[in-house]
Length: 124
Image (cartoon, rainbow, N blue to C red; front, side):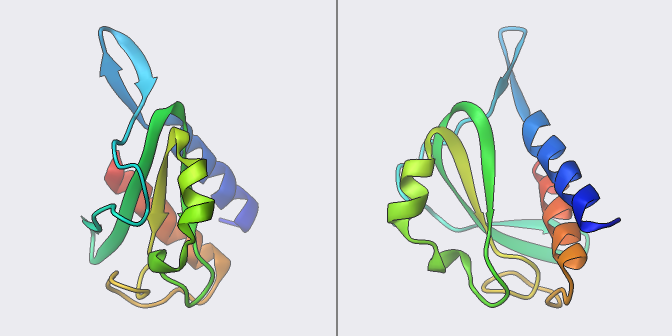
């Protein structure tokens, strides 16, 4: 899978994460108001445990925030992430081997995308 295919697949997964309510399909919501007080959660997928936080809420498509190579979800500035959560769920994510997530750090963009996709599959 190349980087373009990985990004397109990620967009599809974010767009299709839904909850059923009164027979309608709606986007999920979160209730945490700020990145400063959101609890860190953990998701086990295959041999990896991913750390993440959910903030914001609403019915627009969720936004998965990925950090650069050595940054963690703690490096996100709430002045940036909190406004993004107006009307949508924002998920701050630590990839494999970074921060509180387990595993080996991916060495390529495709490897990082594969971990993001595995995380999203585990959320569904």
